[in-house]
Length: 390
Image 1 (cartoon, helix red, strand yellow):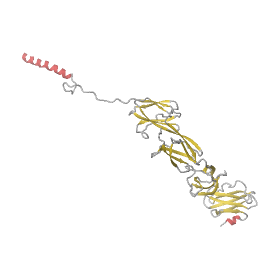
Image 2 (cartoon, rainbow, N blue to C red; image 1 turned 135 degrees about the horizontal axis):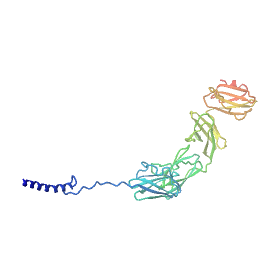
Image 3 (cartoon, rainbow, N blue to C red; image 1 turned 120 degrees about the vertical axis):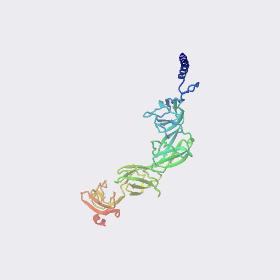
Image 4 (cartoon, one colour; image 1 turned 60 degrees about the vertical axis):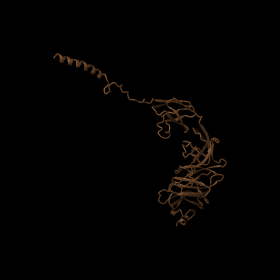
């Protein structure tokens, strides 16, 4: 019995040290091998910021920061937000955790010019914008139409880029200083769009001649006021000395009833043909109009007729209206019409009309339901009402 107890004690003493050794090894590690290394994790990018300094003479109103190759798409928000960066000032752009290091900055100035600059966001903490890469070009408009847009892009390119005028326009006989930033090309294509005229495209060397002139300043610029006195919107206006009417002089504008428009024509001649097109597709043509005399040109509608008076009494009122109208409308003469006087009257509507004349003694005569398309001229004399009836 004592022999057995001794054997059990010896085995127990042998097993306990082995169990203690096993308890000190990491679970799952083979005997004698080193502990596994921790997983490899990349440190998150640091928050970046950039001090932007404006050393130009114009305020910067927008700034975009984006990875190279993303210009025009995926540029993200305007980093200035509602702020602006005045000339001579600096602004801290808080960019956040941007990657990769190679970034681009697009600055948009208050004059609508812009420039893209590359920088290393991981190494640079400051970026200065200057006018060293700015090129000024004088644009002169010697045409008789408003210059609405101008595009300047490298010769051979199919992408015209932005309108270099931005929100500005150049009036006839006026000029504009155009600024190009970060634009290195000298040989360029220029495309100019005018109001009421065809666009013009030309090739130019803006390094040799930083001046773009359109039109001929030696030809006089004529100006005359055109007024729409009809009751219908005047949609298009043409002025020409040839059978070809050319472009609509109103451009994108229209003339509402009562509105006026300064028609400008650069020409050495004064006699022009005018054509007005109204919203209801009616047209009114004027031949041999003198645009040099200073008298306004009034379009009163498509239906017009001439009146002459041989009455001894003065006519103080002439009224013309469509047969279906219950109102005579306004008096179409501004001064009394005496013996031998003439007047031109007009009406919007179909051919069937009513005509009323009022004398200086308030007596009146009326012609109802006559066809003014067939009666383009009437002589007002005793018995004229009977003569004008069909």
